[in-house]
Length: 247
Ligand code: FPP
Image (cartoon, rainbow, N blue to C red; front, side, top):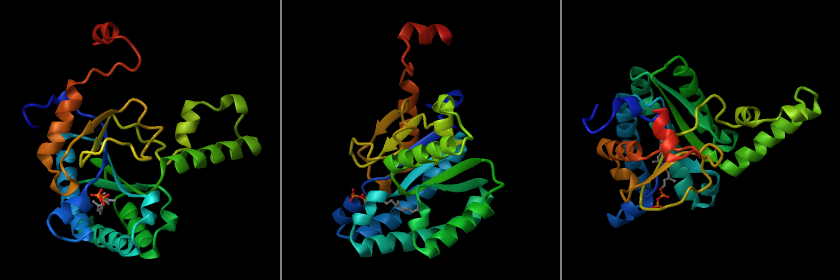
């Protein structure tokens, strides 16, 4: 554990908006896909560090529902990179005890992607060191609409009473059912936006923004983000005095 971190206060769930691959690559005179493939090294290093620090859930925003609007060549390249990375990393995921899952509507991804995602989910299902959750074709607003439909369906078929709709039932209808809300969200590349990512789940998250582009994000940047998180006072609507008394 890095000495500046308090091992008793590591976020259980960290979510990352991996941004800046394209700009990083362009600044080097390379094409955008070079940025994305370099971003895979950052994923590997970040995951390794997260396991080391005892983080239990790591959610990475890999492809948003809005990303379908990108040039087809970039989309195809990203999908190929996803299949190749899963194939290449699967043995290491199993060695490190990583359980892999996805959030988002993966049914719209190319069939080769769906096959390798299913393979990774099944082959890592029994691992329990950390959950690696990839957000793919993910839109938080769509997630909320889809949760609403599930709840309404249960009311219509009589398995849920209108008065029994509550925060827990709603939470269980989201893609992230059974995953605790992230305490810390990191966005790279200097952008200060949430971009339709985990809108419900981020209600009380601490937000950390770094100017570092995703392909350059490494262990030290994760340490910096957790250190920043540990300096925050999380009040959940209470007063500072109450929070101090409860400690
Ligand atoms: C944002 O940078 C990044 C993405 C849309 C894709 C992220 C994907 C990876 C890091 C590869 C994922 C692969 C695996 C296996 C997890 P951007 O393209 O929006 O950068 P820009 O804002 O500079 O254009």
